[in-house]
Length: 399
Image 1 (cartoon, helix red, strand yellow):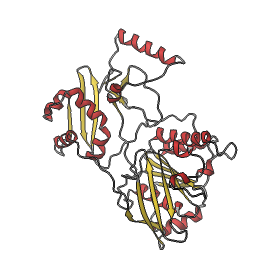
Image 2 (cartoon, one colour; image 1 turned 180 degrees about the vertical axis):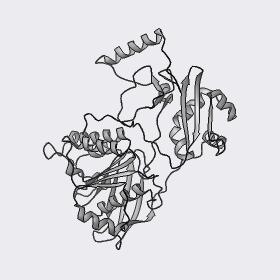
Image 3 (tube, one colour; image 1 turned 180 degrees about the horizontal axis):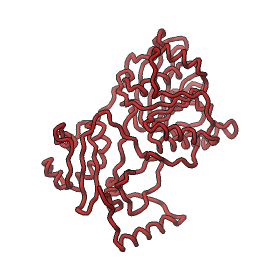
Image 4 (cartoon, one colour; image 1 turned 30 degrees about the horizontal axis):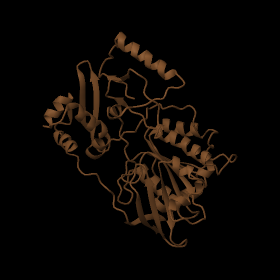
């Protein structure tokens, strides 16, 4: 949470998606640009009453629809536009199908910022836990795939601790030491699972992915978990994920890589998830470099139609005038909108991520002594933000 935001009631706990707001624009948050607002005695009494309610064992945190629209969530910048977003994903395929080569390819492109096929990439540090490899094999593979010009933003480890036995602390330390981390790959999931316990329990599978998802959501990164398919055939490829449905149920999505012929050089990559559109990509292996190349996409990415209000906001700012600061009423007048100021604010609250991702405009609502203010800033396309992640996120508990 930014330092200038001050809460008058505790923020609701993180829900199933692991998201929590960075700012309230309703009466629950008072934000100032330079100094704190001292709460009145009446407000302090309300704060204390709310804290007492939250301390009760039967307390259930809720949010009304109006409060939801008054809440601003930070932008979730894609790792790879249209393909990979912050969250926890399974990457599944049969043994020796080429998963590790594609993982190395994704890791390299994210660490260097080079487009992957026709997908733009947002660069950042990558950690690749290659737990079924050794450094000699990695050296041979990477040099054949990408040449010998390396990058200091792609880190490898061939051993790591297991879930519940220190992995959380290892990953937390890495992210805290590399604050621009965007992607962590664990190859494979089985290597970090506890050998004991009920491996085929839905509850156990759901708990394992849930713990990893908590870490990914708290740190604002993408976490790719390499896993295997089962031998049994199924009409739905995603039903072939080894283990119970608890794995996919807890994850944000999944990638499945399958070859039509085991000895062939063509594969199908299917993508399904909460944040990314469902896709079916036909890939071909470059046998000289051992990289996967995109032959064609069998599904066309859906794109939201232009938003007239966001278009007007984008047109109002320029390189000569990159910032705007004023009240919601003044903004409605500047945009020449026949729209109530509070509805304009709610519209911008809901579309903060889109305004940033599509128009490179940072929207910041604040509340001051003089009333509500809106700050708009045009930013460089290279600027990225991490969702729901402070520099020092919670390092206690978890995996």
